[in-house]
Image (cartoon, rainbow, N blue to C red):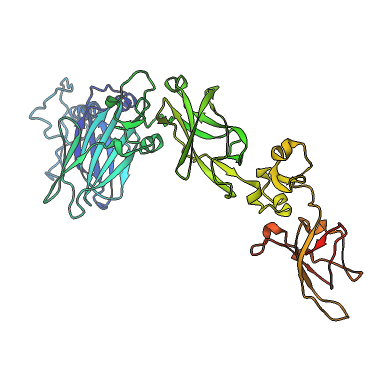
Length: 480
């Protein structure tokens, strides 16, 4: 492995602690490439103290008569080391004897990050507790890297500097805000950080940019020094990834179901509500087609928000259902993250079922729609004369079947004619059919050709395909 570039810098406190050194000790950040595979490279880090110790140990070994003098890649005439009685410390400068010394003990380190392109330049710095390394590549790209510990680092950003040339050198502006990168014919200026491009806490922390964090006081992605620090949780770093956010509904779903024109309190689960937020005033903002409605909200047990009761009638009566965006506001203007897009589905049973009993009882059970027999409407139980009138649920059968049409209208005397009946309230499944007859002759419906209204695409009419010449039902009905 051959060193391509190196840089000496003091580490951030997290890395220093992991390496067993202080943040005042120097560390060598070096990028290597294999002699036979120069198209790939790796980043390694070494405390300078360990390099000095290894150098000193190699000198002691040689002055004890072990190993050889000389460097084979400079001079092929290699001689054995001479045993010399001398005290050798880290400040030993050498003598005429045993000179030069190559040493057999290497300075070893595990790679912290590998690249599929050759690294050509490196610069390291620190921000807060973090150690950041900027690496120029042969393909003209800049890699921005965070070193988490002595064996692991990750790339948090890749910047295309100059596709036509390798990055040969990197310099950091004294105030630490800009990088200058040199390629063959160009010097480029690149921002070290650009936190304000991230608009939500999730985006801000999800980028794992060590310079950026979420400031709860301003509800913005900023550098820590730009966030007025009134407490230990005012600024959230990427390592915590503890964004105050909506986690879902009380039942764990991402959808809150509310029947049109009903009075209902909606509740959501929240997480990471730190002290600064817990004492704030909360509100729920619902947005539908550009219209906004806001109600007060209450934080319960630090993990639940109750939005005050309201009448859900601020959408068109003609729409079967519509989704309302939900935003939980705190402190008047700051919003909790809503990464899973928890929303309110406002639905109208009548319009979902085209106000047909069959379709009503075939609606998804989540809507809790049923057939109100007094009003002849598809409604939730509470809307059926305040729950006092007869109300059919999805496990019951619609009464009074109606036949709209049938065909063919004629057939041979011998029978065997298949007849299709169109109508409503003909049952949800073929098992609901008690009997069908034509001119007193019983007919059997085909089980696999019974289509409830809810599955009919073109006509919204129940269809029965019958084996004989048919028409009728035991449950009284009428023919239109």
